[in-house]
Length: 446
Ligand code: HEC
View 1 (cartoon, rainbow, N blue to C red):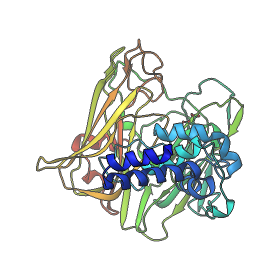
View 2: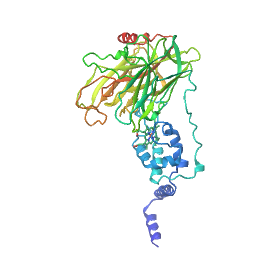
View 3: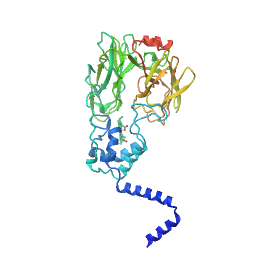
View 4: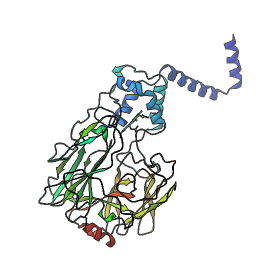
């Protein structure tokens, strides 16, 4: 009786079209309440694509998402992590640039994970599960031609802060070698924040005087002198960070390690409550034939700043002008805990400008490369311009000491402002042709 009355009233009040719409919404709502997304059918495919790369045994994520049993207790935390876009970790503003290694969930995927968590994380019918992903364990680059293991292990204490460690390993190369793929593999990922393997050419001054084969801490920045950023990286061979793929260059491309070069490892260990031991390895696959193109990591760097105490938004700029035509294939902003945001812009000789990467909330816990979907041709005279802001205020939880004026330095309590980028150019072209004259002295000494 009551029911009938309501429906009569409804009939008089609502247009036919609205009724159809209402019926549709409530049907969807009912289906949703009765049939929330299930792990097997709806959630697992997303986890396979976007999460398991890091969330499986032996990788950086703190729990495994391979099975329902291991995932289920984390449902509420997963909802929170995806809604706040904390996970999957990805920091580029979607308005600029397209990157091959981007990890972004669609709104629909976020809703699926949230609805599933809200419905108390049902498993569903395991028969609906997609087949498990076959993850390649071991070297992602295939069997290396050459493996360098750190000559001594590093004992990571259970707690405290471990300064960035450096260790120099001689390449042993007596002739120039072309590298097609390279990968850094920690032996204990749980305590490795990031590692960078740099190539130090024989003429470089960088860390000269430090003994090979031993861990050391970068010398204190000399604030009175101009910091020597020309000594920076030499070539960046390959880095390791959670979820960062190995460096596998396209056929015909290679990185060059000159005869007599050293490999300088920069290692950042982060204690996790248990005493651990790591003895990282670097694997290299050589190019099987002479490459057509060389890939080289260079940077726009500013080492002359002094961030005032307490400043919440201190701006630092750096730029790099190419002296001949090359292609740009990847970007990697680098700052420490006071780093706040980072932007890459191109200015063409015509005056036209283009933003190619914006990282509005830089997070130094994630050392990401941004690999461009399509390399960008930089004509002679094009500039790569980088702008960063630093937060030296007490509101920044990663600020070690807001009362300090902070200079350039390799240690985490100092700051760096480096816009790394990968250039691609003919393998036989001398690097000097690309560099602005003021940089050549620097490079020659690297
Ligand atoms: C690039 C590697 C990577 C990917 C991809 C990734 N995670 Fe994580 N995740 C981590 C690491 C490392 C941590 C621990 C450090 C942290 O919380 O920042 C973590 C932590 C978490 C936590 C715990 C957060 C907390 O507050 O304790 C949740 C939940 C989580 N991830 C969910 C996800 C989900 C869901 C996805 C996929 C949509 C995902 N993650 C993709 C690496 C990753």
